Image 1 (cartoon, rainbow, N blue to C red):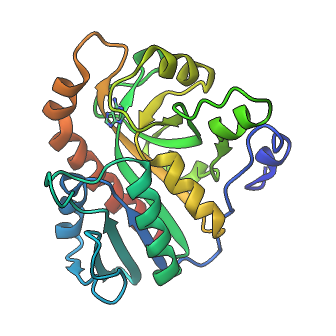
Image 2: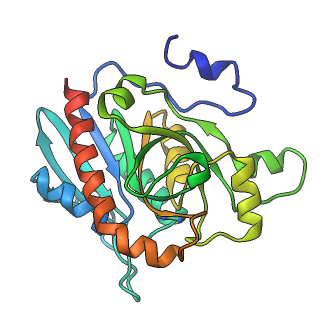
Amino acid sequence: MAPGEECSVLVHEAPCLAPPHNNISTVLLVIAMQAEALPLVEALKLSQDDTLVFPKSVPWIKYSGIHDGLHIHIVVPGKDAVLGVDNVGTVSGALVSYAAIQALQPDLLINAGTAGGFKAKGACVGDVFVATEVAYHDRRIPIPIFDKYGVGATKTIPTPKLVEALGLKLGKLSTGNSLDMSPQDEEVIKSNDATIKDMEGAAVAYVANLFSVPAILIKSVTDIIDGGRPTTEEFLENLSMAADALLKTGICVLKFLNG
Ligand code: ADE
């Protein structure tokens, strides 16, 4: 089955993100947390050079370089000016993606980051998933058609060869602006049939789709949402392990794209 074919029959249910170009020379990685991005920045020997790309006033950071013939850019939304923590969530994720796509015109966008996983759907801590579909769980608009818009279910581009070559797992991703999960969130996440839950994916994919940039979402599981342990504790405990898994997967994905 050709890429996109599988999606087109379901297009009214979950539209598909843009299909990839044949030739990929510029890859943009959008990563929300510095702790997730820096191991990859170091391994790829990228240099920070955001001055010409982003307005002076914003905290967004771009690291760039050439690796195995590919132009690689990693952008992060930086730190909150007052609190000094990473600018996680959909707003910063969408804004930095918008600015970076405009400036860099990538052939492919990869949103790499951590996620919570549902053990009932087969997720384990340390797993790396490729999202097959993205949707939101905190945009509840109980008016006909707006309800569907709020959920925003969108299929991603199929990457069966990449998934098989790297031994990655596949699952649907649900995005919201909270690390925890309210009962209302839970209800929507279940109806989204999500295996993993993050705080940026659907928003970054939305921006990529606006500009017809193919997007792949790669998520490393830090915590098991239905596992009984407090999410914050498990997330912080496993963040560096998950960043390491993202590093290894990121390098392999770039090698795969080049090969
Ligand atoms: N990132 C890592 N774990 C997460 C969770 N449980 N919810 C949202 N984003 C996450």
